[in-house]
Amino acid sequence: MKQFFIILGFLSLIFFVCTHVTLVTQGTTEGLSIWYNHLVPVVLPFLLISGYFLASLNLEHLSKARAVFLILVSGLFCGYPIGAIVISRLYLAGSISSYTAYALMPLCNNVSPMFLTGYIYQQYLQEHMPLYSMLGLIYVPQAIYACICLFLCHMGNRKPAAGRPDETKGSDVHTSVMENSISSITMIGLYIVIFTIISRIILFYNKQDLFSVKIISAFLEITKGIPDLFQLDIGIKIKTALILSLTSFGGISSIFQSVHIFKESKLSLYPYIIGKTICSAATCIIIYVLA
Image (cartoon, one colour):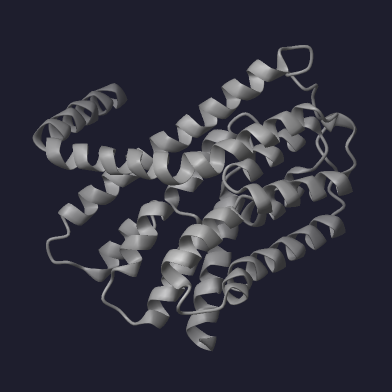
């Protein structure tokens, strides 16, 4: 029975694509354009730099304090999905516990400052708020969440995992870093294309032009979602709250990217999703109440 539904779903998907060629083609083209023009130039250099840096460290003998510092620096300054990669590698090496990883995920698997200031702020929010206000609204709720979780982790006296040897040692580090970087940036592009297509399909069938459907569509993929939110015919206060809430959350696409990254370490994504949701809601509420 399960195989029957899988085959039925596959045939239905093929039929849908064949009958909506223009819609799927436009979504694919738009997704690839977003990936190539906005993500590759920003993310790929950091993937390479962080890859070589991690390969040069002895992660198995890194203290917890240094591991947390490394996660904070790489996650906050390099952006998606570097934070997830570093957390996963350090957890596998036994430098941090799963509870520490869960505490730091929402803060350190985040948009990069280059994307935040160079794209979101300069193109959409520069005329509506100071830069420090935007940064505070994004990072302060996430930092408070991380501190609370780390405190609870410390009170529970959670120990790091046993760890396992680094598989890149004794191999061609240069080739390994290059292959991993290309694999990661390609994976990001695929998810962007998939969710851009889904977004177009949702908007295509939103015949009644429902506001809630537009919000759901925007929260699928951040790079496409932010301009879509900015174009909504609503007050600037609500618009700013939604844009920064999406920025804090990162979009459904980033969650699926993180699933791919955390697959090897087998870290659960539920704490990450819950943390992102809480921080995103906090950002939205603070703007709406105080602005």
